[in-house]
Image 1 (cartoon, rainbow, N blue to C red):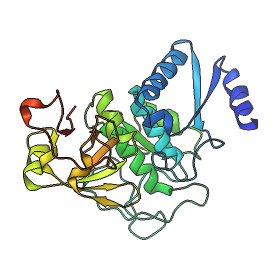
Image 2: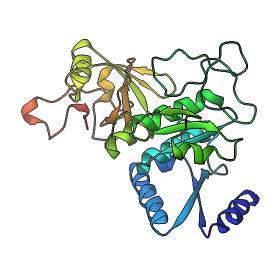
Image 3: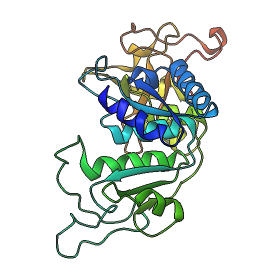
Image 4: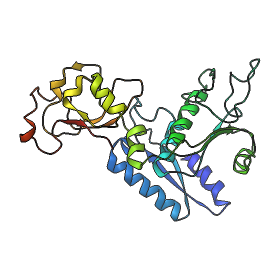
Length: 282
Protein backbone atom coordinates (compact mmCIF):
# COMPACT_ATOMS: atom_id res chain seq x y z
CA UNK A 1 0.00 0.00 0.00
CA UNK A 2 2.87 2.37 0.78
CA UNK A 3 4.35 1.85 -2.68
CA UNK A 4 0.99 2.51 -4.33
CA UNK A 5 0.58 5.68 -2.26
CA UNK A 6 4.04 6.80 -3.40
CA UNK A 7 3.16 6.32 -7.06
CA UNK A 8 -0.16 8.07 -6.48
CA UNK A 9 1.56 11.12 -4.97
CA UNK A 10 4.15 11.26 -7.77
CA UNK A 11 1.58 11.06 -10.56
CA UNK A 12 -0.66 13.53 -8.75
CA UNK A 13 2.00 16.17 -9.39
CA UNK A 14 1.36 15.59 -13.09
CA UNK A 15 -2.42 15.68 -12.50
CA UNK A 16 -2.71 12.00 -13.41
CA UNK A 17 -4.71 9.33 -11.60
CA UNK A 18 -3.20 5.94 -10.79
CA UNK A 19 -5.36 2.80 -10.93
CA UNK A 20 -3.90 -0.27 -9.25
CA UNK A 21 -4.46 -3.53 -11.17
CA UNK A 22 -3.44 -6.78 -9.43
CA UNK A 23 -3.21 -9.82 -11.68
CA UNK A 24 -2.86 -13.58 -11.36
CA UNK A 25 -1.85 -16.12 -13.99
CA UNK A 26 -5.52 -17.08 -14.42
CA UNK A 27 -6.14 -13.60 -15.83
CA UNK A 28 -3.97 -14.64 -18.78
CA UNK A 29 -4.49 -18.40 -19.02
CA UNK A 30 -8.29 -18.06 -19.18
CA UNK A 31 -9.28 -16.72 -22.60
CA UNK A 32 -12.32 -14.77 -21.36
CA UNK A 33 -10.39 -13.07 -18.56
CA UNK A 34 -7.52 -12.32 -20.95
CA UNK A 35 -9.89 -10.38 -23.22
CA UNK A 36 -11.60 -8.72 -20.25
CA UNK A 37 -8.21 -7.56 -18.97
CA UNK A 38 -7.48 -5.86 -22.28
CA UNK A 39 -10.87 -4.12 -22.19
CA UNK A 40 -10.25 -2.97 -18.61
CA UNK A 41 -6.78 -1.59 -19.30
CA UNK A 42 -7.90 0.18 -22.47
CA UNK A 43 -10.89 1.68 -20.62
CA UNK A 44 -8.64 2.99 -17.84
CA UNK A 45 -6.31 4.57 -20.39
CA UNK A 46 -9.23 6.16 -22.23
CA UNK A 47 -10.32 7.76 -18.93
CA UNK A 48 -6.87 9.25 -18.45
CA UNK A 49 -5.83 6.89 -15.66
CA UNK A 50 -2.41 5.23 -15.49
CA UNK A 51 -2.73 1.49 -14.71
CA UNK A 52 -0.26 0.42 -12.02
CA UNK A 53 0.06 -3.29 -12.75
CA UNK A 54 1.52 -5.87 -10.40
CA UNK A 55 1.13 -9.52 -9.51
CA UNK A 56 -1.38 -10.39 -6.82
CA UNK A 57 1.04 -12.16 -4.50
CA UNK A 58 -1.71 -13.01 -2.01
CA UNK A 59 -3.57 -15.30 -4.44
CA UNK A 60 -0.85 -16.33 -6.91
CA UNK A 61 0.66 -19.83 -6.66
CA UNK A 62 4.29 -20.25 -5.68
CA UNK A 63 4.99 -22.13 -8.91
CA UNK A 64 4.81 -19.68 -11.81
CA UNK A 65 3.85 -21.38 -15.06
CA UNK A 66 3.25 -18.10 -16.94
CA UNK A 67 4.65 -15.07 -15.09
CA UNK A 68 8.05 -16.08 -13.77
CA UNK A 69 9.00 -12.47 -12.96
CA UNK A 70 7.75 -8.89 -13.30
CA UNK A 71 9.62 -8.44 -16.59
CA UNK A 72 7.60 -11.23 -18.18
CA UNK A 73 4.43 -9.80 -16.64
CA UNK A 74 5.26 -6.47 -18.32
CA UNK A 75 5.81 -8.25 -21.62
CA UNK A 76 2.50 -10.10 -21.30
CA UNK A 77 0.56 -6.92 -20.53
CA UNK A 78 2.22 -5.11 -23.44
CA UNK A 79 1.32 -8.01 -25.71
CA UNK A 80 -2.23 -8.16 -24.35
CA UNK A 81 -3.17 -4.61 -25.33
CA UNK A 82 -0.70 -4.11 -28.20
CA UNK A 83 1.34 -1.30 -26.64
CA UNK A 84 3.15 1.24 -28.80
CA UNK A 85 6.32 0.41 -26.88
CA UNK A 86 7.75 -1.19 -23.75
CA UNK A 87 10.69 0.03 -21.65
CA UNK A 88 12.29 -2.38 -19.17
CA UNK A 89 14.53 -0.65 -16.64
CA UNK A 90 17.59 -2.40 -15.25
CA UNK A 91 20.66 -1.63 -13.15
CA UNK A 92 22.79 -1.57 -16.32
CA UNK A 93 22.66 0.34 -19.61
CA UNK A 94 21.00 -2.30 -21.74
CA UNK A 95 22.31 -5.73 -22.69
CA UNK A 96 26.03 -6.35 -23.09
CA UNK A 97 27.91 -9.11 -24.89
CA UNK A 98 29.30 -10.16 -21.49
CA UNK A 99 28.59 -9.19 -17.87
CA UNK A 100 29.35 -5.45 -17.43
CA UNK A 101 32.83 -4.83 -16.06
CA UNK A 102 34.38 -7.83 -17.74
CA UNK A 103 37.04 -7.22 -20.41
CA UNK A 104 35.57 -6.88 -23.88
CA UNK A 105 31.96 -6.38 -22.69
CA UNK A 106 30.12 -4.08 -25.10
CA UNK A 107 26.57 -2.79 -25.01
CA UNK A 108 24.36 -4.12 -27.80
CA UNK A 109 22.52 -1.23 -29.46
CA UNK A 110 20.03 -3.34 -31.46
CA UNK A 111 19.25 -6.89 -30.43
CA UNK A 112 19.72 -9.72 -32.91
CA UNK A 113 18.71 -13.27 -31.98
CA UNK A 114 21.91 -14.49 -33.61
CA UNK A 115 23.97 -12.29 -31.27
CA UNK A 116 26.41 -14.18 -29.02
CA UNK A 117 25.72 -13.05 -25.44
CA UNK A 118 27.01 -14.35 -22.13
CA UNK A 119 24.56 -13.44 -19.38
CA UNK A 120 25.61 -12.58 -15.84
CA UNK A 121 24.32 -13.96 -12.57
CA UNK A 122 20.70 -13.66 -11.47
CA UNK A 123 19.90 -10.29 -9.90
CA UNK A 124 20.03 -10.15 -6.10
CA UNK A 125 16.88 -8.00 -6.07
CA UNK A 126 14.82 -9.87 -8.67
CA UNK A 127 13.96 -13.33 -9.98
CA UNK A 128 15.78 -13.47 -13.27
CA UNK A 129 18.30 -10.69 -13.91
CA UNK A 130 19.17 -9.51 -17.42
CA UNK A 131 18.28 -12.92 -18.91
CA UNK A 132 14.68 -12.48 -17.72
CA UNK A 133 14.56 -9.01 -19.29
CA UNK A 134 15.85 -10.34 -22.60
CA UNK A 135 13.23 -13.12 -22.58
CA UNK A 136 10.43 -10.63 -21.80
CA UNK A 137 11.69 -8.24 -24.49
CA UNK A 138 11.78 -10.98 -27.11
CA UNK A 139 8.23 -12.02 -26.13
CA UNK A 140 6.86 -8.50 -26.58
CA UNK A 141 8.84 -7.93 -29.80
CA UNK A 142 7.40 -11.11 -31.31
CA UNK A 143 3.94 -9.76 -30.44
CA UNK A 144 4.66 -6.60 -32.46
CA UNK A 145 5.72 -4.34 -29.57
CA UNK A 146 9.12 -2.55 -29.82
CA UNK A 147 11.12 -2.84 -26.59
CA UNK A 148 14.02 -1.01 -24.98
CA UNK A 149 16.12 -2.19 -22.03
CA UNK A 150 17.71 0.80 -20.30
CA UNK A 151 19.17 1.88 -16.98
CA UNK A 152 16.77 2.70 -14.17
CA UNK A 153 19.47 4.61 -12.32
CA UNK A 154 19.55 7.53 -14.76
CA UNK A 155 16.81 10.11 -14.27
CA UNK A 156 16.79 10.94 -17.98
CA UNK A 157 16.63 7.33 -19.26
CA UNK A 158 12.99 7.42 -20.34
CA UNK A 159 13.43 10.80 -22.05
CA UNK A 160 16.49 9.48 -23.88
CA UNK A 161 14.63 6.37 -25.04
CA UNK A 162 11.67 8.39 -26.28
CA UNK A 163 14.02 10.79 -28.05
CA UNK A 164 15.69 7.91 -29.85
CA UNK A 165 19.13 8.44 -28.32
CA UNK A 166 21.52 5.50 -28.39
CA UNK A 167 21.61 4.74 -24.66
CA UNK A 168 19.94 1.33 -24.43
CA UNK A 169 19.35 -2.00 -26.18
CA UNK A 170 16.45 -1.93 -28.62
CA UNK A 171 14.41 -4.99 -29.59
CA UNK A 172 12.62 -4.10 -32.85
CA UNK A 173 9.05 -5.34 -33.30
CA UNK A 174 9.25 -8.52 -35.38
CA UNK A 175 5.69 -8.65 -36.64
CA UNK A 176 2.06 -8.44 -35.61
CA UNK A 177 0.24 -11.51 -34.32
CA UNK A 178 -3.51 -11.65 -33.87
CA UNK A 179 -4.70 -11.29 -30.29
CA UNK A 180 -5.67 -14.97 -30.25
CA UNK A 181 -2.22 -16.04 -31.39
CA UNK A 182 -0.56 -13.78 -28.84
CA UNK A 183 -2.68 -15.43 -26.15
CA UNK A 184 -1.84 -18.95 -27.31
CA UNK A 185 1.86 -18.28 -27.78
CA UNK A 186 2.68 -16.36 -24.62
CA UNK A 187 -0.12 -16.26 -22.05
CA UNK A 188 -1.17 -19.87 -21.61
CA UNK A 189 0.17 -22.67 -19.42
CA UNK A 190 0.32 -25.92 -21.45
CA UNK A 191 -1.67 -28.78 -19.96
CA UNK A 192 0.34 -31.41 -21.76
CA UNK A 193 2.78 -32.15 -24.57
CA UNK A 194 1.86 -34.11 -27.69
CA UNK A 195 4.43 -36.22 -29.53
CA UNK A 196 3.58 -36.53 -33.22
CA UNK A 197 4.76 -38.65 -36.15
CA UNK A 198 6.66 -37.35 -39.18
CA UNK A 199 3.53 -36.79 -41.28
CA UNK A 200 1.80 -34.74 -38.58
CA UNK A 201 5.01 -32.78 -37.99
CA UNK A 202 5.18 -31.83 -41.68
CA UNK A 203 1.52 -30.82 -41.66
CA UNK A 204 2.00 -28.60 -38.60
CA UNK A 205 5.30 -26.96 -39.51
CA UNK A 206 5.21 -26.81 -43.31
CA UNK A 207 1.50 -26.50 -44.11
CA UNK A 208 0.19 -24.86 -40.91
CA UNK A 209 -2.49 -27.54 -40.78
CA UNK A 210 -4.47 -28.86 -37.82
CA UNK A 211 -3.25 -31.81 -35.75
CA UNK A 212 -5.39 -34.92 -36.36
CA UNK A 213 -5.71 -37.90 -34.05
CA UNK A 214 -3.90 -40.42 -36.33
CA UNK A 215 -0.78 -38.26 -36.20
CA UNK A 216 -0.45 -38.48 -32.41
CA UNK A 217 2.19 -40.88 -31.10
CA UNK A 218 1.90 -40.17 -27.37
CA UNK A 219 0.70 -37.52 -24.95
CA UNK A 220 2.58 -36.32 -21.89
CA UNK A 221 0.47 -34.82 -19.12
CA UNK A 222 1.58 -32.10 -16.77
CA UNK A 223 3.66 -33.97 -14.20
CA UNK A 224 5.37 -36.18 -16.77
CA UNK A 225 2.97 -39.12 -17.17
CA UNK A 226 3.07 -40.42 -20.75
CA UNK A 227 0.02 -41.97 -22.42
CA UNK A 228 -0.68 -43.68 -25.73
CA UNK A 229 -2.54 -41.72 -28.43
CA UNK A 230 -5.89 -43.41 -27.79
CA UNK A 231 -6.05 -41.59 -24.47
CA UNK A 232 -7.02 -38.48 -26.41
CA UNK A 233 -10.30 -39.94 -27.64
CA UNK A 234 -13.51 -38.82 -25.93
CA UNK A 235 -15.99 -35.94 -25.63
CA UNK A 236 -14.92 -32.54 -26.91
CA UNK A 237 -13.40 -31.21 -23.70
CA UNK A 238 -10.90 -28.36 -23.93
CA UNK A 239 -7.73 -29.51 -22.20
CA UNK A 240 -5.76 -26.30 -22.64
CA UNK A 241 -2.89 -25.74 -25.06
CA UNK A 242 -1.30 -28.85 -26.51
CA UNK A 243 2.26 -28.53 -27.74
CA UNK A 244 4.20 -31.09 -29.83
CA UNK A 245 7.54 -32.16 -28.38
CA UNK A 246 9.58 -30.26 -30.95
CA UNK A 247 12.19 -27.53 -30.88
CA UNK A 248 9.88 -25.01 -32.55
CA UNK A 249 7.30 -25.62 -29.81
CA UNK A 250 4.05 -24.83 -31.68
CA UNK A 251 0.91 -24.54 -29.56
CA UNK A 252 -2.80 -24.90 -30.06
CA UNK A 253 -6.01 -25.40 -28.05
CA UNK A 254 -6.59 -29.09 -27.39
CA UNK A 255 -9.97 -30.72 -27.97
CA UNK A 256 -9.33 -33.80 -25.83
CA UNK A 257 -8.13 -34.34 -22.29
CA UNK A 258 -5.16 -36.70 -21.88
CA UNK A 259 -6.99 -38.71 -19.18
CA UNK A 260 -9.98 -39.61 -21.32
CA UNK A 261 -10.53 -43.29 -22.19
CA UNK A 262 -9.03 -45.14 -25.11
CA UNK A 263 -11.45 -45.56 -28.03
CA UNK A 264 -10.68 -45.73 -31.76
CA UNK A 265 -12.07 -42.86 -33.88
CA UNK A 266 -15.44 -43.53 -35.48
CA UNK A 267 -15.62 -43.83 -39.28
CA UNK A 268 -15.35 -40.42 -40.94
CA UNK A 269 -18.93 -40.48 -42.26
CA UNK A 270 -20.29 -40.84 -38.68
CA UNK A 271 -18.17 -38.15 -37.03
CA UNK A 272 -19.45 -34.81 -35.84
CA UNK A 273 -17.86 -31.64 -37.18
CA UNK A 274 -14.33 -31.34 -35.79
CA UNK A 275 -14.27 -34.84 -34.29
CA UNK A 276 -10.88 -36.46 -34.65
CA UNK A 277 -9.13 -33.08 -34.69
CA UNK A 278 -6.79 -32.84 -31.71
CA UNK A 279 -5.73 -29.22 -32.14
CA UNK A 280 -6.77 -26.68 -34.77
CA UNK A 281 -4.67 -23.95 -36.34
CA UNK A 282 -5.71 -20.38 -35.70
